[in-house]
Image (tube, rainbow, N blue to C red; front, side, top):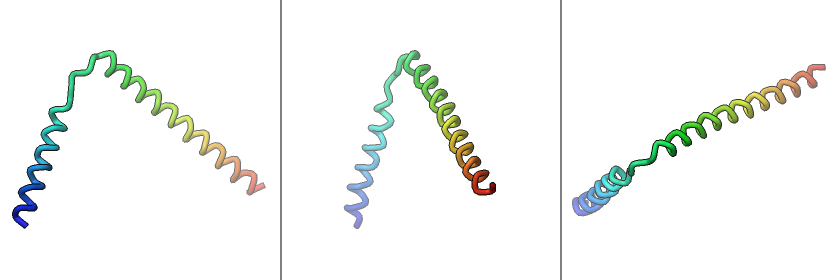
Length: 65
């Protein structure tokens, strides 16, 4: 069991180290474009959620009448 822990512990350490080293410098334009895309995505998700709520409310009103 000791060999198993040692061997896989080293693999986990190496993979964690490589993940940290894989971060590269990204141009500022790319960072701002990603931030803008995240904002646009959030507003679209809010719009879709509002549309679903309105449709559900209309269905409830039709059942009540």
